[in-house]
Structures are given as structure tokens and as C-alpha cells.
Image (tube, rainbow, N blue to C red; front, side, top):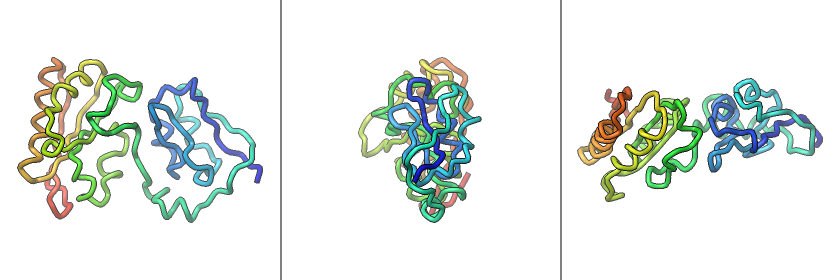
Length: 202
């Protein structure tokens, strides 16, 4: 059917992720540092994302598009949350040193297992944050050098570390603390610990 739906100008898009955060339906995601309309049937055409875009990269257009599917949106967690991912890739080893979404960002640096342990991880931790993940035990790498480069190259507002209560997860907390020190910057840090049954301990 022909209906009103958003269009994203990739040339204008700065990759800040504001539109993805503003989209309650989860229709917009960040792909390779740019906002992208992931599914026509998730876009309700109301345009909550338009005023959120500081680069004026989003507009309405009338074109052939799938009907808005409210049931599919609800089933995927839209309106009640939905995906809060604001950047890609999220793996620390794959993340770029510098990207537009890092500018004045609040970072979440999370151990892999946290997202599986805590049922509401997207809303509790990822919302309005740029996410980086890793496993200090399985990846067998010292993240501190890569993280220090990210912190040094970008203006980071704050860092939240999400880790499990198990001892091996202390590696990611330690790496972040070392990276902040190596960057020479005074970045606010909060460490949140999740139990193996999914509760936030502190």
C-alpha cells in the first residue's frame, strides 16, 4: 500500500543514534555507524524520530510500504521497550577507535553473560547508552589498550560497567579502570554487578 513512512538520508546522518532511541517501535537501528529503517512494518508513520535528529536527516515520504503491524511490534517488545542498541558493532575487539556515536556518549561496557542473566537488560542498562561487550576470560585479550584508545579519542561523558558476580568477570572492571587511567581523563565510572540468577546486586 502507499502510505507515509520515514526516509533517512545517510549522507546527512551523523550516527548519533538519537532517532533509534526515540523510535518506540524498534523500526530504526544503527548499521555501520548510520541510522537505518530496519522494517517498514514497524514504522507507524508518526515520526517521533524526526525531532530527535539533530542533523535533519529524517523526513517523511509517501511510497509503497508494508502496513504498520502493531501486533508484530508488541511481540518484539516495541512500545514496552524494544531493542535499545544504539551502535554496531558492539564487540570491543570489533569496535572502531573513533565513531560519531562515541561523541559525548554515555558508555555501557558489559560482560557478555550479563545480557543473558538479566531479563530486562536493554531497558535497565542499554537505553540511552552506547554499548560495548566482551568476555575477559574467553576472549583471552587485555581490553585496556583498546578502551584507552577509545576514551582518549572521544569525549566520553560517563562509563557504566555491567559485570557478573563471578570472579572472572572482574577482568572487565579492571580493564576499564586501567583504560581510564591510561587515557588521562577524569571519566565518571559506575560498576553494576549482576547475580547468576539475574538480580542487580549493586
